[in-house]
Length: 77
Image (tube, rainbow, N blue to C red; front, side, top):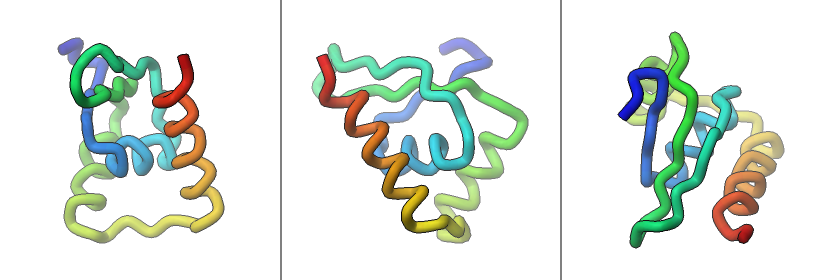
């Protein structure tokens, strides 16, 4: 894995990263589970820690739009 990349197979983790402004660079659909590739930035680890500790706060409609965007990337050809 490139040190400037963060990858995850967790859909909700991908959504929270996208919601936080991280660029989704690639969705690898060649495996059984999709792998989401993001640019790693200075705040990636903090965002993921807040997410795993259930401390993330989101604006519901913006979060929903991020979910739709990632589902669109996941299910598109």
